Image 1 (cartoon, rainbow, N blue to C red):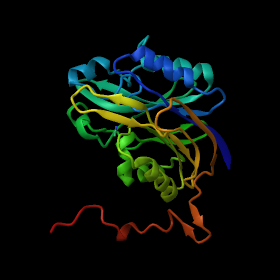
Image 2: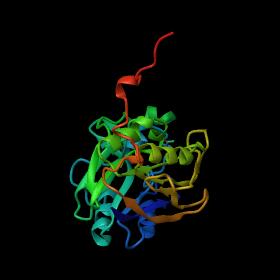
Image 3: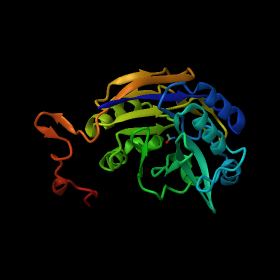
Image 4: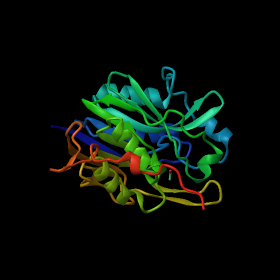
Length: 272
Ligand code: ACM
């Protein structure tokens, strides 16, 4: 058993003001924490009016970070603070755009996740993620990433947990009211900790206003809300979270992995 100090950073991005949004997020990084999670698309804002606009604001996240890029700024911050940072960014890879999340360790090495389940108008901008649900060694444990609407598909958290993730990092721009409660169940059914970093504020760049719901939270592996923020404020929710590697003993006689019965489960809807 070990503990990790984990933080959800809740920001209020202004669309297109990349440098300001980055600076505001970095100002909130709490000294002494092991792992800090920033919201989805935290540096750009959410509501792209077109693919061209998203492309102009997106970054290459596969090559070494370009000088002056958001990825470079996050990498410098991780090195300076010793914090492993997870952040949602718009990614360009050739002609494709992905709604991605990067994990950046203090030594500058990175992990990448591309959002699998796109929400609403994201489908007109981004390509669905093509990397599956990878897990990464970071801060002495195994960490996975999922982005916002991935929450509604229990397979996202399940895939990460089956892959060995002990902490789910969940950059978000939530607009529906149900995710924060659902993540409690995602933690319990997988016995993993989770940190949902959501944003606040509104955007109306395409004629349909979106209000982002805040309420970022750090949940324990039993789904307890260890720290949280309200729906309007910017700030940090930080908690010391217990990690018990590969322990899935929910009751003395129920191991969540050993008791699974995959042969009994449907994986596709039946017709008629
Ligand atoms: C969402 O996936 N940004 C709701």
